[in-house]
Amino acid sequence: MDFLREAVALHKRCPVIDGHADSVLAVLGGQRTLIQRSDKGHIDWPRAREGGLTCTVQAAWIDPVYYPVAARRVGEAIDGLLRQIAAGEGVRLALRAEDITAAHEDGGLAVLLNIEGAEGIQGSLALLRNYYRLGVRMMGLVWNHRNEVAEGVGEPESGGGLTRFGREVVREMNRLGMLIDLAHITPRGFFDVLELSEDPVLFTHGNCHALHEHPRNLTDEQIKALASHGGVFGVSFVASFMGKEKASLTTVADHIDHVCQLLGNADHVGLGSDFDGADMPPGLEDVTRLPELTAELLRRGYREEDMAKVLGGNYLRVFRQVLG
Image (tube, rainbow, N blue to C red; front, top):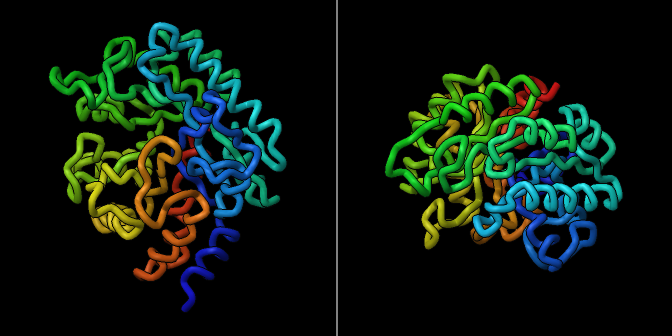
């Protein structure tokens, strides 16, 4: 079988969703746009479509230097993304799951907005609601540092979980119909959210601790808990999360395979590249190489039914439940 040819065909038949990218940073920095095809960075709208991607989750990340003006920086990032979406041919803002399925049907691209770290709400549920009104449909509770909601993995000493305000944020996100992203949170915070949230949650970009010990990676216990709550684990392509010297496209497939073997199914794993936010391994230099990862999984015996879940079906299930 020509696995790559079958992978390309599969990307046309199935919606393909990537759970995390940081591409707006290059736009804000003036290095490039996302509208035009570029040889810089990992993803832009034309290359996303070349790679058979249906939906990219684009993050508004706040560099710590901007923490004193976090809300302003988030606003600039959202504005930047909305302008790129509006100017892109066949590109639409994803507010509901049906926006993604519609993009797949017409060969377009959907962009779902995420805020990476609750620094941007500055202790205000009103700001959270205003971001929702602007079209943001996902928020990560932390980046690597402690904030008013929880603690990030970069500050593990206290072992802290959700704060009182953090619990209010989780409840309000549930009420709004907003996706919760647990990437970067401490283990205690991770389990606090699973206990509190009425909706399934996501872990959009990380890898498996059992294959490589790194504070950003999930233990088998966490993976099982996330799955039992109905959530999805977006396996990242970040070389340093897999052991930088040995990381490759096949290593990413190993991490996806580990989740499936651990759970006994392919129902709770997806793609979480971290394009434009980290170092990519050989074989996955940019979004146009995505079909090669699919081909590797097909080569390992994954059936189309399971691949459809990994490529986007699992995310879509949660999107339908939370976003409508």
